[in-house]
Length: 156
Image (cartoon, one colour):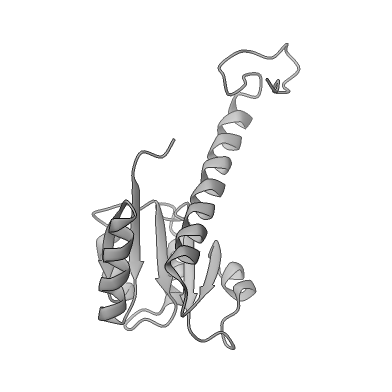
């Protein structure tokens, strides 16, 4: 089970960055704030978040290039990315997913919608981890008991 929720928020609008940081802190997240893609990369050298909320139009290193860079780097490829943009005509969910992002949210968004998307991404990430662990040792099930040599997990 995930014991802490740490998120890197990359947003070029300082007011929105601060608002998101405060709101997510109140919802139990530890927040790391960055105003540009370059600042985000610098912060990732010292801290590893569970998730990245990435505004696509950011200065210095835009969200598209940052997402591609993160997904190509072995140390960051497993960190899920929720892309955010107010330009719904130019950036679609499908395009962001093709770039390596895990989901897309259009600005403006309600805090409840953001929280739901973040939790869904974390839940999916946990399922991937469980399945990866099960594929390493397919004869055991989640409760630690062995199956009867079939490699198939018993559902209890």
